Amino acid sequence: MKVAVITRHAISNYGSLLQAIATQTIINRLGHECEIIDYIRDDESYRYHEVTLLRRKPNWYNNRIKRCFYLALRQPESILAGRKFEREQKKYLISTKRYTSLEQLKCDKPKADVYMTGSDQVWGPVEDGSYDSSYCLSFTDDSDKRISYAASFGHTEMTNELEKYYKKWLSRYQHIAVREDSAVSLLQKMNIDVQQVLDPTLLMNVEDWESYISSSHLKEKYVLVYQLHNDKKLGEYAEKVAKCKGLPLIRISASLHQIARPGKFIWAPKVGDFLAYIKNAECMITDSFHGTVFAINFNTPFVEVLPNNNTGTRNSSILKLTGLSSRILKNENDVTLAERHIEFSYANQTLEKFRCISMSILKRMIEE
Image 1: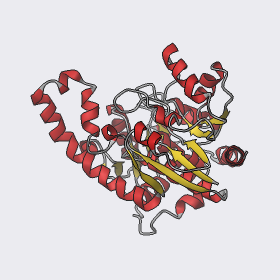
Image 2: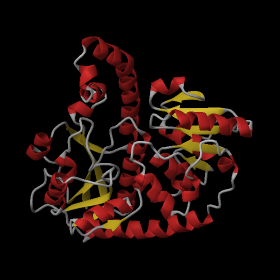
Image 3: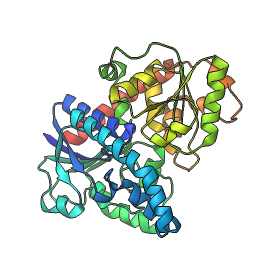
Image 4: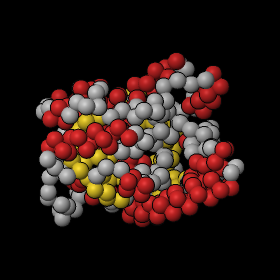
């Protein structure tokens, strides 16, 4: 069968791209044909991304001097990073033609036997703060088959208005599988049948991901920092860990402005190099969900610094599932946490068990 997947695949973010790669790989492995719906709203394209973000800050956007200063500083790096990720998307993903609006999807939807909402925070707000029903498959017909795999809201609470919005669209799905236990709770409150599954990147094992890694990766030992959120304490903690271990600190990021933060800066490495940096690190300090996921999958020692913006439920959820909640940093001066041995055997066994369960659920949802 042909499966058309809509997800947030075109953001300049490694997790967004890697989950799309994994989703496509696994669906193909199950014997089906997967196509990523190349849906990129104009206001979310890398060319206009910074303008969209700035509009949410009226005191900056409405001030011409501030607006020009901000865009001169941030827009070039956004465009350069966007082009890099666009090349990686074209390399790894089989996609439909480009769609830029819900209206275009409705007028000429991709042909498929199954329409699927993919993983990551597809049911949360988009960049301008609104909610886009395209990710709830609102462009499909009543007769179409609709499923979701590892979808996420990105938050744990919602207003009555949002609850009505989700209930309207999600009640049309034949099967729903989500990533976080918090999402299970939200949907159960709406009396919507739901199952919890692994993030698609965890459906691929170490050997699968190693096939993307170049053998020429650097061999020296290092501490790695992979940071998505603006938290000065994370960088300071990573510096302490590197100093304690007597190792250089390497920072990887798609955001060029992180060059001013602690660590030797590696800007927007290719997918294979990104994976290699995580796999070969002596220790990784991260606030990223997918950074955490790959550390667990590769059995790389890590310290989790939960995001300070209430988006850490997905991080906490996977750590709880794999018995690794003790890796969450509670005291920013506790460098001994980075020194403590991690016994990954329970995590590995749990992932293998839930990998089989999640694959079975995905297969059944597609084929039933």
